[in-house]
Amino acid sequence: MPELRLDPLLQRWVVIAPERAKRPMELHQEGRLNEVGFDPFAEGNEAHTPPETFAVRNPGSAPNGPGWRVRVVPNRYPALQFEDSLKPPDDLFDQRSENPFYQQQSGWGVHEVIIECPHNEASLCRLSRENFCEIIEAYQQRLLMLKQDPRLVHVTIFKNSGWQAGASVRHTHSQLIATPVIPMTVNQEIEGGERYFRQQGQSLFHELVRQETATGSRIVLETHDFLVFCPYASRFPFETCILPKQQKSHFEMVSPAEKEELGGVFKNVLQRLERVLSNPAYNYVIHTAPFTAPELPHFRWHIEILPRITGVAGFEWGSGLFINPVPPEEAAQRLRDSISHGATQ
Image 1 (cartoon, one colour):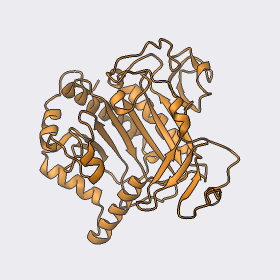
Image 2 (cartoon, rainbow, N blue to C red; image 1 turned 180 degrees about the vertical axis):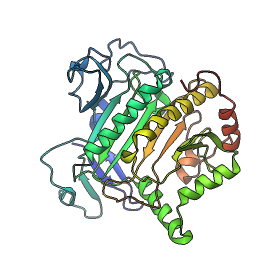
Image 3 (cartoon, one colour; image 1 turned 90 degrees about the vertical axis):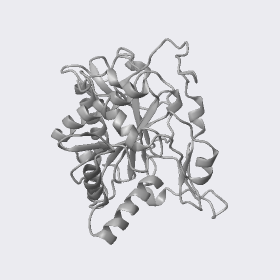
């Protein structure tokens, strides 16, 4: 079974998951398709995946059969494993370690794959706006369901697109990992927002929207409910953030109107990145508050989109300082200028 191990210096959890090494690699490093042929994610091949936990289906279609448009299944090669027999979080710490300096915890959690369309498609941008909205619906429904388990405290939803971004399967999909601990990045964002709130008496995210709107140079796209911009201190070229204008710390609490608008915004932004960067590899990650937290006035859910057009080298790994050769103002300008007919369809 996997293990969660805690770094005693940085208080950073790391997953040790040997089973992940067994997953099939469908993509070459050059991004070409290996000679695999069979697509277990395609409609009609439902028997070749674990039973679905959620699906957006056509009326009258049966679970674990054809007729779906978005389908969620457990990952066959999970980073963390679900076991009903484990006790609530306070009892999860593993006492087998003979050295109390190192803390470890059973590698319990949930790892699922969100199959984003029934046909073998590599590019998320080729899906319809309606399909984007259905993917967001799947994200929300899985968060709401997993939130009911008191052993889980946080869910990270992410996508790896292209081998440079960590993808091993061509068929467009994203993933979620639910954990019994709060990831360090989320903790840092919440603590930073809380610190600013104490010092300034207002939300850092509210001020962020105000500052970016006033400046305008880093904005890619603005709608009624969302601001899309290249962050002032972008770590990577063309790093992009989708931020809701209204305060809401938990992604699972988005309204139907917000989901509809977000589907169009998400598709629009990915199309711009694909056009400007010629179909780049990228990751996106949804940052949301822990299940255990109430509505937080100092934190706001958001989506980070990280194109992988430059590598992370020794200086970045050793120092934590990222070298970005493309100023975010230039990146935003190029993304703004990329609009053409059909970009939001």
